[in-house]
Length: 319
Image (cartoon, rainbow, N blue to C red; front, side, top):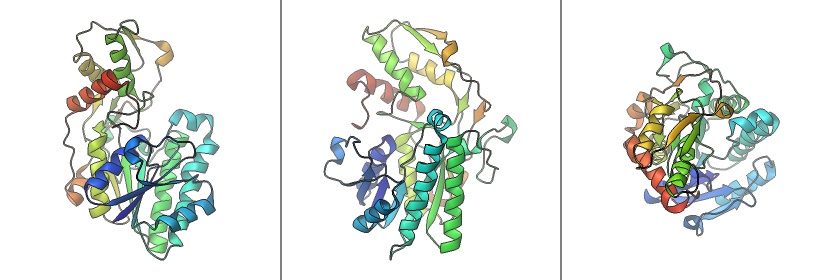
């Protein structure tokens, strides 16, 4: 099967490309103009594409002729979605319409995997945890609203045109190569720098009490691959660990992996009031439909991220 990955040069796209290639699939992808192509993708068919350009989307689909499409490309920053909601909507929603319309114009009917986010659930109470796929969506920021709109469009096109679309709500995931704008690689980067004597041994932190459903990216992309092969058209699937980890717990685990005596101090500038103290998914549906379940222990993930920063400064795209 030939699979087109939009956003193939991103953190998740790189892992997914290797996972699919190991499974025997032919992989191709899209990237933005000027986006760095990792060395392991040098021989891969990659098209430069701006999803907001309708004609260009159709051209790439005709040139690549995929049997399946995994749609990862997105404006994925919540902070940026607040600063520029119009751009976020243009890329994430209008861009998806261009993709769906381009696929609808093809002679074939490729399978489509739309990658959404647990952010779509929005404000939930502890009593509603773990969250099932039939739980109401209450997006609390423009990024989350756009992802919810993507899912609505996916359902609409699947029902109206008989398109083979599967939708995923992915919970937090991390791994080697993730940018330090995310909490775990941020901690790991600074711990590694302290070990090298590059900064004072004081870790400034924000809210450590938030609980999130964290997984290893390598487990997540294996789940995406299994959904492409075994998922049911028109269905929505949670994918995550099904377990909650407080940011404090994850930090304490990382600190236990170093011999350095590192002080932890609250930084008011890093504090972000959260309306959602706990966000954990119910993953029984994906397990029932595909047999997928997470396999990599959290301590292994954390150690791999920390070791990546120790050895390679955590540069994205190498792993």
